[in-house]
Length: 198
Image (cartoon, helix red, strand yellow):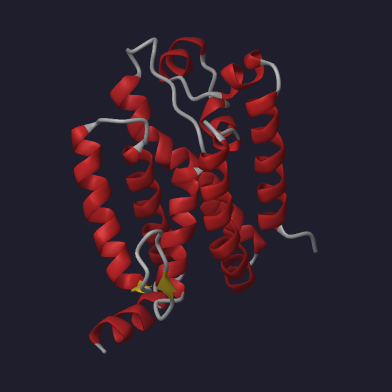
């Protein structure tokens, strides 16, 4: 059976490269623009925006994170559950941006970071013993500790609302990843609690 993660990875790579190096009209049509979603009912932008990226660094970072976490997670939970996690993650991670910016005609956002946050946090629940490396920190960080720090940082950064990074999407995706496991496999949290309690 064809891997859902492989299809998502391949489509994201191809469409992002077209967006970065192709005609500007391509990426403009794929951006999440809450103003247009509301007024022109362009609901496809909730999903399309997850397949294009702002620059090569943005794309490479997201695809590396996806590669290391999505494929093992899909093998563990199955393709159907993985695709539900990912695509609902795309939608959920955009909801905050939609409501915050739906009256701003100039606002636009893009990237798969929200859905990838969902994958990352679901993976942390299922594999709590893993460690995560973050450049430039030279030591591995236990996954549960990383999760707590990441949520705190993202929540704080989203309140500041500065810079190009859509922290609302990261936070929404991370929370969806945790909720997805709770809804579909609540027993997985027992292992997580055992690791946290030592």
